[in-house]
Each structure stands twice: as structure tokens, then as C-alpha cells.
Amino acid sequence: MEQRITLVTLGAADLARAKRFYEALGWQGQEVQETVFFQAGGLGLVLWSRDKLAADCGLAPGPATGFGGIVLAHNVRSEAEVDALLAVVVRAGGTVTKPAAVNEIGFYSSAFVDPDGHAWEIAHNPGFPLAADGSLTLPDFG
Amino acid sequence: MEQRITLVTLGAADLARAKRFYEALGWQGQEVQETVFFQAGGLGLVLWSRDKLAADCGLAPGPATGFGGIVLAHNVRSEAEVDALLAVVVRAGGTVTKPAAVNEIGFYSSAFVDPDGHAWEIAHNPGFPLAADGSLTLPDFG
Image (cartoon, rainbow over all chains, first blue to last red; front, side, top):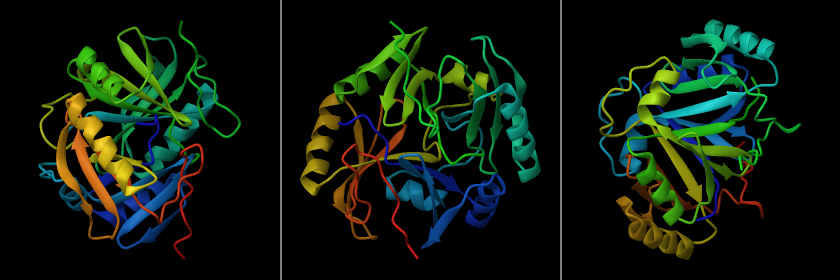
């Protein structure tokens, strides 16, 4: 298996609401057949009905309450950018679940959930420098 | 907010078990401070304690049962590659939740869950051609 992800699909209870939220964050995508596709670096971030997404994987959707077990991180290039982005998140209707602060690892981060409860971390981690195109090459920890 | 994801972190109940699973799929990563980092294209796929991950986002971990609401897709270049990869997944101890078949959209796909229940779709979608490096540029649906 090659080490890559092609799509990250977020289940949405209300597709229009989810689309509005990401558009309010400044994302631009395409809606086709009740699915919204956003280009996100070398992969696609997708919004789709949570029930259909579960069924498409042969799974029962279950209740959409609480932590889903996966967190998406969006790293930025300065602490000021973390604060600025959080303000955008709040205006867009996101729920900040962790105020921005230096975490126990030693970098500045915050977290929010989208209208469907999907968790994002917003962080400035100088140990994980971003390329000009925003991509990350992990450091050698050895 | 730039349209990109820096890290996708999968909460694990048993980090060693999760690491063994992804290594059995052929992934190679680095373990540092009870966290496993895999380079995945321009981002990092990370394995970390589910409880610590939730706490780091200011969320209660809750029970890790059932569908988490997010699916990662790994697209490949042929239907035969879907079948071959599924065989690797089964040998690694993954649970196939949808046998490989042509789905209602018209492409060949399958799905499995990892030992923590994180859902992956394995698909060959000729409408989403992959670049040589495995990255995806979404087609123009207009």
C-alpha cells in the first residue's frame, strides 16, 4: 500500500450547512450529486451525507455524537496566524473546544469542531516547517 | 484558511497494535514519544492515543464504538490493485466491511476498518486519475 490518502470524507448531517461552514472559512469547492469536493493539497476533502458515507463503507451510521476518533490538523506559519484563523472559525460558526495556548509538547495550538463535530487542530509548530505550497515533510526524529 | 490538511491523526486504543497494522500494510514511519508519524504525500498520517488525542482537542474521548463519521479513501490505479490491496489488508488483520464491487456511482471500490474501527475505502475510480506521485487533482465537474 502506498503511503498516501486520496480523499478525506467528512460525514455531514446537513450538507448545505457543512458546505456553508467550509465556504465561510474561505474554502472553494465544487458540488456535484449532493457531494462537495474541495482540493486540499494533493488530496480531496469531501463533504457527503453521513448516512450515505457509512452505508457506502458497509457500516451502520450510528449516532453522530461526541468525538469521532480522528483529528485533522491545519498547521500555519505563526502564532498570530493561529489567532487570526480562530477568529474566522468563530465567525463561521465553528465551536472552539480548546483555546489557543502553548500545549504540553511546546507549540501553540487550538482546536475546534465543525457543525458535524469533526475536530480540527490549528497549530503553529516550528518543528514541522511547511513548504511554500503548504505541504509537510516530516522531520527526521532520529 | 488555506485549503490543505497538515496531519490526519487516528486515535488508537493500543498504539503498538495500530502501528503493527499499518506496518503490515507496508507503511514505514517513525515512533517518537508514544506517537507514530507516517509521511503520506504532502501530509502526515499520525497514530496517537485516542484518549490523549481527544483531550488535546478539549473533547471527551467517549466510547470508540461504531462509525466515527470520517472515511479515508485510498485510490489505486486498477481494479486488480483494489483486490491485491484487500488481500494485504486481510492478512494484516483489517476487517473488510464492504466486499469489492462496482458501486452505484459506477467505480470499483471496497472498504475496511483498521483495528480501531477507522474506515478506509479502497477504490479504482477512472474519473479521479492519480498523478505519478499518487496525488489527486480533482477534475472540473462543471
